[in-house]
Length: 247
Image (cartoon, rainbow, N blue to C red; front, side, top):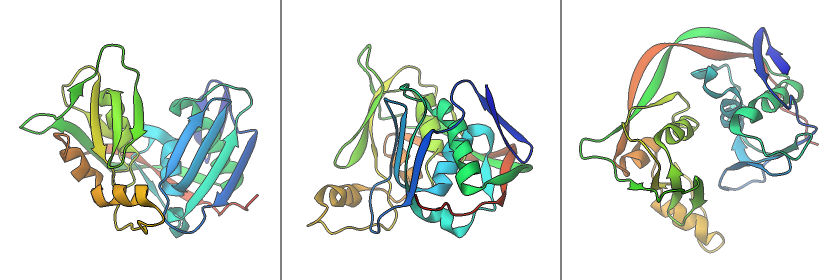
């Protein structure tokens, strides 16, 4: 078991503690859809990703917010990395090597601070959710459609966890829908102020034309809503971080 310490903070997980190989480069100019996946063969691939989103993925639900992030955290990067072995990592297993990457390649130093946390409660609208129960035995999957992300076999707790990582939420999301089991639904894409030339990127242009301007509005389209509440929580305060050198 490996422990990654960041200014007194302990992060531990069974298994792999760091990436054996990691390439970090600024994304090419121009709008491209963010894409982040763990893959068979011990691979982690993240393209066109803002670093504030990547750090949120690394720290998971431990911290309700991040303070002290530099302005270049809004810039996008391409990251391709590999652990030792062929296992496909889960999101939880990814956190330790990803935090190690922030420490070693970004020089991250941080500490914890008590805050009043804003979190969101995922619940049904009064008219009810617009979700289709999945067929028995459906495996969870998310596919990219022309106008929405097509979810199959999704549970409400996994949807809440997915919504928590969206850049315009970036906070804990608690499932209070009362919906048990797996569901199929189309959750519209969310893009704010993005545009592309339909002649050069027709698929992305169609997605942008049908997209919502916020995750909150997209969730409303499937008969759910996100309601804000407050409670005591913890923030990750960045004391030091620098842009990685390209390799």
